[in-house]
Image: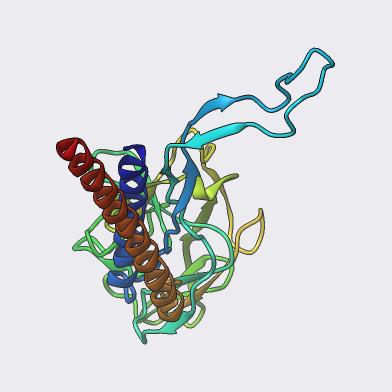
Length: 264
């Protein structure tokens, strides 16, 4: 019976939805995390009668056809790239982006990745790095004898050196943005990778070139809303339950049919 397989696709789709929701909830406190949603599409239809089919020699036609659906599939799990709340950390090297854009990160293999996680520190050479030790681009090296370190909203990095009153400019942090940021590839470790769907990376200055400003001593919280996720979970559970009842009903109908054949 086709209903068994159709309902099974519905159960599989809702299982996928629960997996996405569980990942969102698990990352509720992950810095810079962007929640995912689930999108569905109906599967192909079996056409038993086409709409507009002639029903007589006088050109009368049926007003609608007979199309039997075969179920549902997951079409995508796009990330919702909305701004998360900015949370103070009281850590000197932490940075948050207020607006569009990503930090550009150089991975150990020399390729680049992108992140909204500004939980930065310095390595043994004084270079600005991520929590995994990956270099922040462009490279900023803080002198070991610097008495203070500051980053303004436009990404200009300055330090105060011993015996000098005027701050010295170390460099300029740049931001990166994409024409389709939802097309970025999720690499894990709070990193994203460029894809053909995202378009090429475009570097620009903070506060200009289509990117936001920086805020020192803050990080961006995950944009996960616990109430929204609970509501979505309940909806997915109910849909899964309804599909399972279709499976049960189809099984009972098949059992009745089999008993009728045995009795005949």
